[in-house]
Image (cartoon, rainbow, N blue to C red):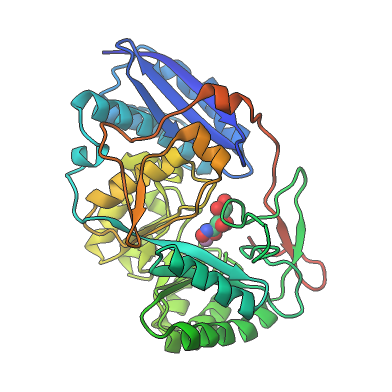
Length: 408
Ligand code: EZ4
Ligand code: CO
């Protein structure tokens, strides 16, 4: 069996997605996700110009050798563009292999280690009252774990908070105010640090101790601010506190860790095991945030999570709407099989997105399960996709009260 065709598909059904489609000479079709939010065409060009010519004629079953060829065989290694491109190839090849085997992909990864993958949804509100309404709505949908974000008094729109929660805003499909140029938001860490504990206090008062609560700081804090936040939230028993600092400075997490017992999740922008080396070896975190799509595919992420497992660190794969249904399905197959699975982020894709990909994973009793059909259990409809051409879109940026650009 040989790879006959490699196609890079870019469409914007609700938001932009980069999908790789690999077809074998036997007519087996595999899909991979290479979507990198706000940098989509960089991955598309990397794939079509630098990767596709290497794949035509290769054995699609040689997944490990292909991964090493694209990673080790490239002079310029690592980075989100490269690793998303490698992920797209890797997942498409796993999809093909599982279809040829006649098995759902997780069976090739060792089989199921659990019934379903615990999932968390995103509740938010411009104020606490709206947030509580949103948490109620998520509980009614069946979520047992919920991320909570609110606006901050004195600031305008804040990233991760629906701009008109309770209204018609499609928060679950698109959290960011994206546009053809970046929107600018205000950020004030002092105001944020004062506000968040009171939010958690209100949520615990309303919902009691059982509900699993998560919170995302989006890399906005310094280590000492992060330590203070973790400490100030200990009484509210968070499942995790996410991305507290811009953690390419792995050693900075020592300070945070020494000051708080709030569990820490980090790394949705990380892409290889090297980004986690100190964090894991010194047990500075509790959850690895990388998803299959941004960490070199199932092959790449499994390397990270196998190492994490030696340190009792579990998976917490990123699952925003910018990970396509193909990427979500891949994360679920890996998550179902992994021993050290922790939790899966789950934001609902829009109806337009689902019309293109027809994902067959299911959500039940607060958890997700991949499809039982051979392969990934996702497809791609070219005719529907053709109705949604690519649109340039930036994530917003944040500025401090004096106008200084703040960390993402
Ligand atoms: O900012 O997916 O935990 N989820 C998040 C997301 C990310 C976007 C960036 O592409 O932080 O909302
Ligand atoms: Co996040």
